[in-house]
Image (cartoon, rainbow, N blue to C red):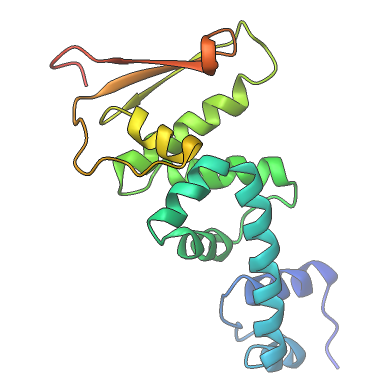
Amino acid sequence: MNAMDLQSYQRSLRRLVTGGPSAADDPPYVRELAGSPRLDIVREVIGFWRSHALERYCVLSAAWLKRQGRFDAEIRRFIAAGDFSPDVALAGQQFLRQLTRDADAVVQALARFEIALHETRYDPAESRCVDWPCDPRPVLDCLLGGSAPEPGGDKVPHRVTVCRALPGGYCCEPLPAGSG
């Protein structure tokens, strides 16, 4: 029996658990796991807990992705990337950073907005500005108040200033034409 160092063994298992294939140099035990129904169960459990934790940390982004029917796919994509922290807050920040590169500009802006909320939550003097491709109020009203966003909405770019010292924690204003 070939000896395998613990770090290589853990890397092989992590690759399998996060959805990657087994490698030619994996030990027989790891290669056998690749087709195991038990591995699917482990992946499902990890996905459930990661999803649950991220949903609690990334409340707004998770809710918006769910409204679009994309949340589960984004969680799978995040897990498949395989490089996430076991710490919920750090993993939440990693997930939000992933969303800032989304193809949907509203998802990008919402993720940046949520990052700004987390970055300013302890210091009322801290502020962050987030540019949106549209008026964010219908999106935020939808997420915070449960109303349905207006189809089409205002496509004028807006800037949101996030600061705990502001009423409601943020303010929103349209950007001047040509500056968005």
